[in-house]
Length: 226
Image (cartoon, rainbow, N blue to C red):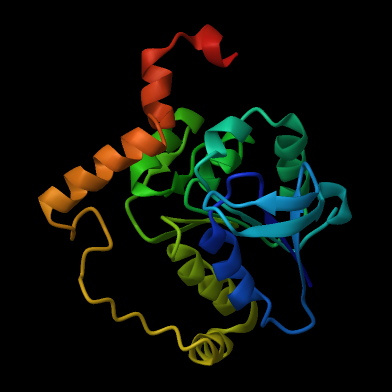
């Protein structure tokens, strides 16, 4: 079984390594990080990177995972990547994304008419690609599974394990990585975080990430995105 995890300069580390940790435990699996520009690929936080192989090294992956990151918007016109996503989707068993990686699936035309999720800051942006934003941690629609922000990639990968090998195997993987989250505060979603925390984080996202894709689209003419 082949698993391709798509990364690019500015990807978020856990978006890629979380699913890797889970999916690498599937039987007879080969997991590879792939990118349009192969080689050492820097994450969006200093001091971390992964070596990516060329996209064409994985021509028929069984599972595709598209990582998100702080630079995802910059790659929405990467025609090499988008064409590859469309091509491998046809033969994949599961095509998935984590966080803002769903925008790349959308840009490839794979989310049209589907329910999908993304990081809360970009959730409404999936509408730009003909998808229905769904505020859930993991959303399965057909053979596409999208996950919300960052850590939800682990949940998504466990669901893929469940679909491929059954509940007992998925539970064994979960136990093997001792995935039993017990954070000190129940503030991991927009609905649960205190309002002041949400406002603070939203301001931080606006400062360091920039406007969401939906906001950018609403503020610009169609010609800017042609």
